[in-house]
Length: 139
Figure 1 (cartoon, helix red, strand yellow):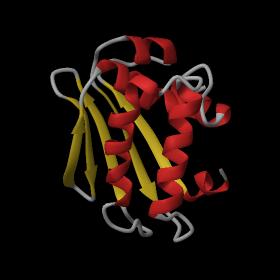
Figure 2: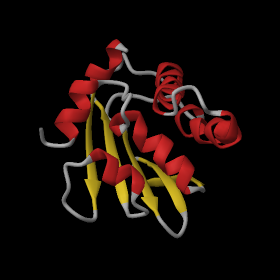
Figure 3: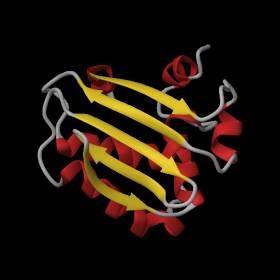
Figure 4: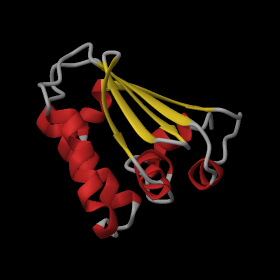
């Protein structure tokens, strides 16, 4: 998606690693921070892109996650996304993937399988963007 050039993203883990498989496999804290840097990004196209990312990450095997993916995507469509918005999406092994928008809690989505699929959007064998994956891993 072209609008991926209109935000800044960074990922954080509790232990330093550049091995994507380890990040996805291990039940450890991990987070991404997404800062919207252009008005081109909307709630609609962000939601669509996240949904497509889940499809790529899971190689189309989203059936077991569908209800949770649908609920999670509400994070991006509750209110219109605008330039300057910041999303923190963090996995807590005891709770799930917590979503914050501009510092305000939005939701928690449970399941290690969901965590793997979600962070797999950027770090799986089939990421949404291979160059972005390499950059996130410091390669």
